[in-house]
Length: 567
Image (cartoon, rainbow, N blue to C red; front, side):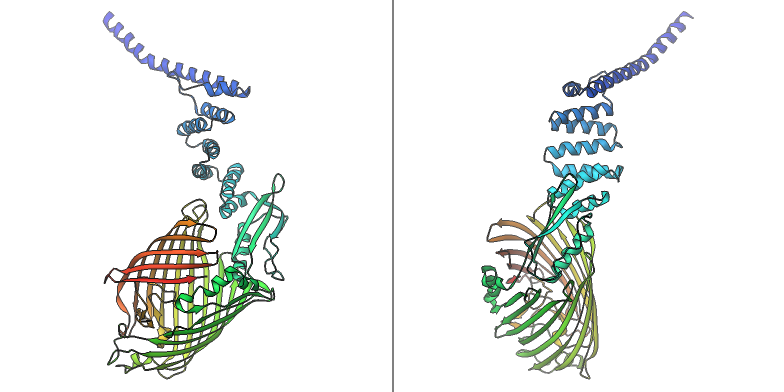
């Protein structure tokens, strides 16, 4: 009986020991918390910061929070970050630790970690004004105004004390008038709409909005504009633009902001014996409004074609084909807001073919039909996705064309197509690295002549580049795959190699994929075409880019060097 009693007492003692230990630890933890609270309220930051985790009791999350704040007051930001991290591990649902740790990371110039913590804090407390203000401020310091406005607008910020243009534009009327004014909150949509309208006018190639503190809560908005005018032709930038195409026998006479009314004249003269071309366009705002622009254009060509490698619908290879083509028309471009715009136009085309050879079928012969046709088109552009924090955008374009050829073997025609373009700047600021991706596709219905077909290849007169496929044979067009249905994917990565005062150099790999077919079967290529290579872009005086590329057709192993300019 005595032995049983002793065993029971021993068991109860063993059971009580951890309970007493837990109670002691709880009492010790409470004592530590009380000491920290007293020292904190007395602003004895050194005493608060001196408290450490001990074996007797792990400090509570509240204690870690107070220690972190004290360390911030002492300027010991790395230790403060560690204290807030310890508190967050103990209380992962407490957004205070994320916000305060972001403050320590901000002091340590670790903006990336600070932004991550603040975004996570907004998941826990989406409407916290301090967090939204803090996050917007960091983005503004990084030069990412779009992201700053995304968060600031949630708390009715930034309020504008004034708005001014620097320098004051020469363009008359309200062509440069912003869609935001003082005193009011600068809305993100208003800035995007203003930027889209200024781009639409065509005389403000560079635009930047700066926010300058004007008091405790307000800001002054300064819109910096680089304005084109006729005097540009007398400067180095105008001369470089004019002569940028001389290596391929082309000049670009332009005249901007005629009469200081944003009336722009642009043209191209090419005297290449195989591809002569004269193009001219005159654009002007409708009713002096920046959101509405009308363009009148004329385009004349005299081209020699060699279809010996791309056309199989003739009794003999078609070489020495000559195409003379004249097109005239007009187009209206209308900006709805920063995300939506549309364009519509109409034109008349006359063409003459010579030395077309003998086609084997009526469908094949229709490609070389001389005559006149009329066409109209409409397109819509929409920003589908904009993630300013990641500096990532996706823009979609839908296009439709319809018309009629005035020959018995042509008749009505139409097309439906579209594109997606994604652009990504991986770094928080600058453009040292950029990634571009574009997907395009379209289908043309009806019977059309040769010059209306799609073409995949390196041709300065076509935007559908497949950069491992040349579009010419000894300077004559016709080598690139042709057809009425295509899909094209272009992707490239640009790395900044040099950025100086007069020029900058970017270079990187490229990858293109495409497929083009035609119902007749005498043109097109049923296979997927894949090209890989490298590309360099040299920007001169901020006005003209020289683009040099080498692409290799991965199917046949042939490579193509190509050079052109972009303005």
